[in-house]
Amino acid sequence: MPFVEVKLYEERLTPETEQALISHITEAVVAALGESVREQTWVMLSGAPAARWGVGGERGQAR
Image (cartoon, rainbow, N blue to C red; front, top):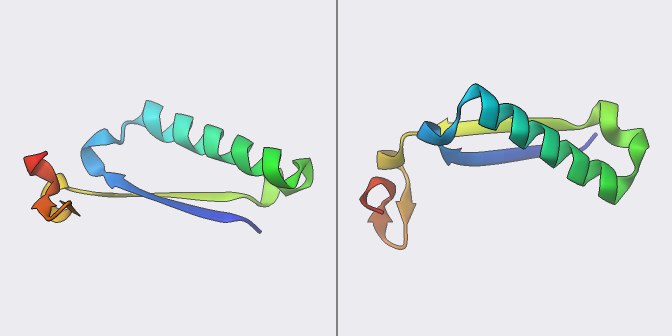
């Protein structure tokens, strides 16, 4: 069972981007492992406010 977790700024998650990410990531897993894994592929989207991320030594919202 492939399990892919994606962590990103919460503000980037909309119903449209969630569906696009889930679809595209699933397709990438199927392309790499074969059609037989499609129904067993899990994609988990985890969002956090930009203020709780650090990138390059700075809070994410500062970027």
